[in-house]
Length: 312
Ligand SMILES: Cc1ncc(COP(=O)(O)O)c(C=O)c1O
Image 1: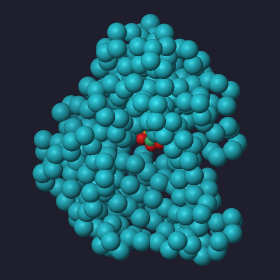
Image 2: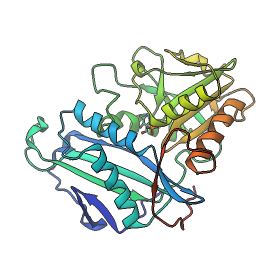
Image 3: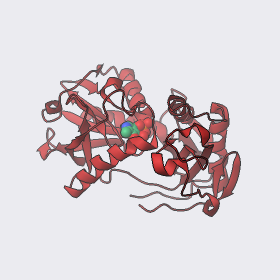
Image 4: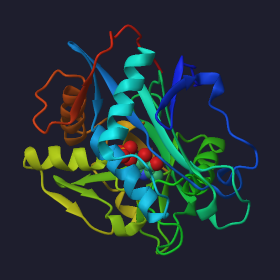
């Protein structure tokens, strides 16, 4: 889906016109992938609109920056307020929010420490990421980065070269998405989603040590599962578990909760979203859309009229 421009982008504390948010081709990030970023959703609700788990996302961005020794001159509160300010200034909800910090124009050696850090936040209308109700996916021939290479807990631009390979391969072969294995052949995650498997009433997901991003939606789904008394296990999972699972689904800010219909053309159970996936998805969307109580304080209200409907 093409980006739909808005009026303003937040840059280093100021709201600037969309078209002025430009960088020099010799900026460090262009050459070496030296960025950290977030993807956040703002949902429309009966009473208005609200950002889903805003502080948790901004904390992850601060954490990503810390891993890469990138000093961010803004606090958690300042970054969170900037997101609200931007959404209200642009007046678009529901929307997707993309904060990004990167090494800008300074020096061109690999060492980033002498290139200035720039922080931008954009928001724009955006719909479903994995289109359709359930996804046909494959196991990718590309693996996730090994531990102690590019760190998976940092949501860094450079990590998405690996994601691009996974996603392109899936796309070219007619799949909606690819599931990557880790360096030891255990299940890891999708190119931009965490992976969940249900078998015999137990909800499994891959642990942080298997080269996954610590997804905010993953955490939300784990929280909801515990609330419903569903047994939850985080452990290394073999590839073949997905083929014999009762249910498989992805989670992510973009993918939200997306049921998986088949993996490598092997249909999961009867091919429909299973009852645990459905229960968790209903609760997740219910809270995000303001239709069920926000028990965990996950929503940050924004003052925008919900006028625009986002479609696939
Ligand atoms: C590689 C990867 N894994 C998992 C996720 C899901 O994370 P979250 O639920 O925080 O969006 C994302 C999305 O940001 C991702 O890019």
